[in-house]
Length: 491
Image (cartoon, rainbow, N blue to C red; front, side, top):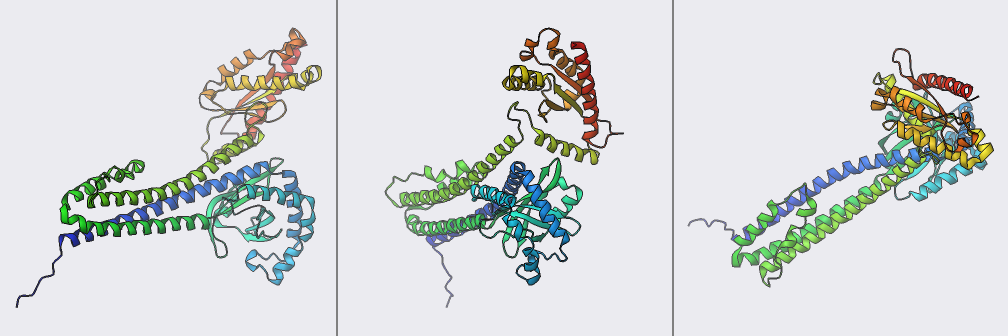
């Protein structure tokens, strides 16, 4: 007797083919989305952590931070034992942190905690906690000074071990801060941690650090992926059932139509290709129409999920942009619109790093000082004095269009000449000197209508200069020399 062969009908083959194809596409799409989304979110969170830390470090009351850090540092240095937070709750740890309890009643501590908690509440959808620390690099310790965590703050004086990235950065230059990195803690899970230096009198006294938990965004991503899988698999089942009915009346043509749509998929234009199924004619009242409506429904569900994820990503980007805007404001002089002393110090540190690495060859420093500001304020009022500063700021921007300009003091301005301005420095400085004048030669009333300023300029010499300050000092001396000459000429 001849053995009967197993036979598959066209309907069965169609169902199997469609179901397997959908599963493969879903798996590939979910794998691709997971990889891309994970990498993008990690970088975005690193940028957000660094931006937030830098913004808050620039706006905190540095005098209060300095005073509190000094008090904590004194107790810490005089402690015989220094147990870290991995001994949390032990007798030694309790005895150690108890030494700092009196500081919790100080006004500086209360004010700083209140400030940090306000920042944390304003950014609660992003940051897990924000805190002030200082480091003992010799013992590789990071000591808490004020923790703004709203739920479970670390006690003042408590100690964490520094991660490897932070150790390397601080040892190289304390001004580097803690580079944004992802750290995996047994108790808290994965955190994005970053720290920026807090300056007091141009010295780094500590660090403003932020922790952002990846737990929430990952849970949200996981939920979306599961829902996407369920929706897609459910729709695949519906498609398979309808395929059995459609095959009775003509399965070849519908398959060609679906194949054409699938082949039009373009990963570089998802906004277009994820809506291709909506073009199917769903008004036909038969099995093909039913299939078309099912595919459109599937596409809508998937599209909605993609829109949700896109919205989440846009919210993160908007928050980052707002942080960038705050940073710009923190680095701008409110009166003249030029960069301020904070921005100058930051750029000075960057250039110093390049000098140390042997990467900086050419730049110049122009030191500019407004003449007669006190006379203008005394004779015409501070409003006119402010206008004189504004006029000088505009003249500086007009002259040195390719270089950053800063107002670093009341009547003191600095320009770091680069690129075209550096190459044409002599002509630009001459143009600037032609624009400024000494109003006292004519009439004191001209003080409120003209600009009188002295300028000193010096260039970086790699063979003798070790930092920006060396160039700055020479430019400052030349500026004061010109100021004396201008006063002699006007007398």
